[in-house]
Length: 249
Length: 166
Picture (tube, rainbow over the protein chains, first blue to last red):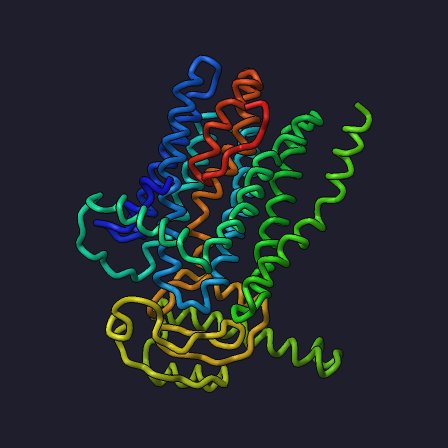
């Protein structure tokens, strides 16, 4: 991803890249929905992969906008909102799609999903972002990325903090498993809509917004370390169930 | 009657809530250009017991680029509208709602990132939650579903799915 996302720093404003990325992703999703089925599996995978490649631009340009346009004291709040939109909005969006699936045809559902993806991005045009500095497309870009990466690795202060990135990484891996338990328990579409969609979305959004309660001037090491045990508190039931299942096998 | 029947503390809370609602409505009018004159602004300031500060006209002249030059506004007690700082007391919820407005003079609000990141969130939610359901309805075998879901996990979040079945 770091190979193509730096493109959001050149030629166009980040807000333009954001809208472009979201619009093309929406197009890919719409196309993918019309290809659903065993006969078009490869085409479907390619179109969704294309959507994934383009949606990475959304993440990069959104992060860039927040860092460059907001003062440091407000970036922690922006980060909390970012997580709320990413997790909560995403799960609620999926719930809306599942709700539509039961009422509309699949191509229409794809169109609705595309609108859901593209529409919020246009809020970016309300941000008075200055034009980008004139620069070349890719010349020297990879060398610059390599230099920055090496400087982080060589910095004694930052070297060990890279290890902290493992925690969000494993969190994401666990999150991708979230849809599986309901399917394994043969819960129908309505069950998934309510458990993974509405309830999950609200809980994730509220949990993310808890970050707003933490003042920006607190020691971030403390708040980061505190987030681990806090999130662990919510999982004992699931862990116990899995252990019970493993013991019964 | 409601206000009279409650304790003084609750009355203050209702009063504060009404003031916050009026402030939000006023801000919406102000942004829409419904009340553009200085006299009207001052009357609103009297109504809301707010003070105005630093009116320099053009927003671009106030902030051509970079982060907002205004004092870091604590969203719990400050409302910034088109370069004016309105200090007034607001609750946590109203503060969050104000934070959702996309922009203010000189830059975005922290809450605007919730709109900007939604395309990514909805896309990932679509892939992780809605797509398996759609594929199962379309008769795609679960093994193929897992395989291509693993291929799709990497680009948005750059995390490799640890599912052993991949």
